[in-house]
Length: 296
Image (cartoon, rainbow, N blue to C red; front, side):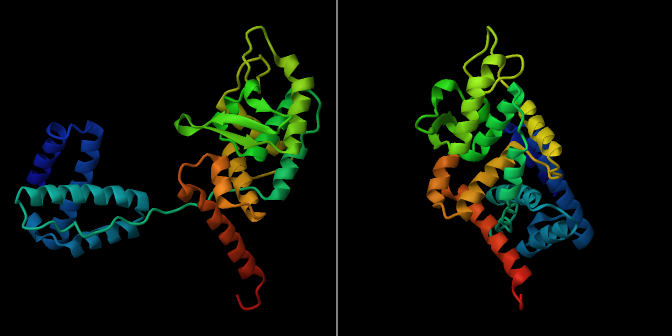
C-alpha cells in the first residue's frame, strides 16, 4: 500500500497541482492508515480493505480524541485515495465510497445576557472624549449587530441619526442598511458633538470612531477596549466584539423577532447561518425546563 501512496502523492503533485503542504497532510493520513491496517490485520494489500475496516479505523481515531473536523479531513484523504485506486484498477471497488463524512459539530455562539450587556454599557459614565467614544461604540455594536470590521469602517456619510440607520459594507462587499436604536443614537450624538471634535487631527478621515491620535481605530484596540471596560465593571467573562453581535441576534430572537429580519440585519447570505440562534434559544429553554420542571 505504501508504494501506491507514493504514486498517489505524485499524482496530486503533477496532475492535480496541489500544494506541498496538502501533499504532506494527505501522506500523513494515508501512511497512518496503512500502518494501522498492517498491524491490525497483517496485510498491506489495499484490495483487502473494506468499508467496515475504514469505518472501524475512524471510530477508533474518534475514541482517541480526534475532533470531528479532523475526522472529516482524514476521511476525505482516504476517499480520494481509494477512488484513485479503483479508477486505475488497483482494487476491484472503492470501499470508502459509501462512507458519509461525520456531521460537523455546531458550536453555539457565546452570548451575554441582557443584564450583563446593560451593565457593561451603562458602566461607562465618564464625559471624556474616550469615554464618550467607547460608550457610543458599545451602544452601536449592540444596537445594530455590526461585525468588527464593519464598525471600524463606519463613516459619517453613511450614518443618519435623524432617520436612525447606518449603511455598512459587509462580507462579499455587500452593502446593507441597519437600524440604529434610540440609546445608540443618543450616545453617538453626544460623542459626535462633544468628543469627536477633540479627537480630530489635520489628517483625520471621516471614520466615525477615531483614536486619541485622530486615526482610524484598529481591531486590536477595539478588542482591548472591550476587555478593559468589562474588567472595570466586574464582568469576569471574556468579552469581545463578536460576542456583542451574537447577543444582539439572540436577544432579538428571544423577544420575538422574525429570523429573516435578523438574517437581513446580520448580513448573512444563507438563512442556515442565522438559524444557529434558534439553537441558542432552544438551549436556554431546555436549561430552564431542566432546572424548574419537577420531573425533568
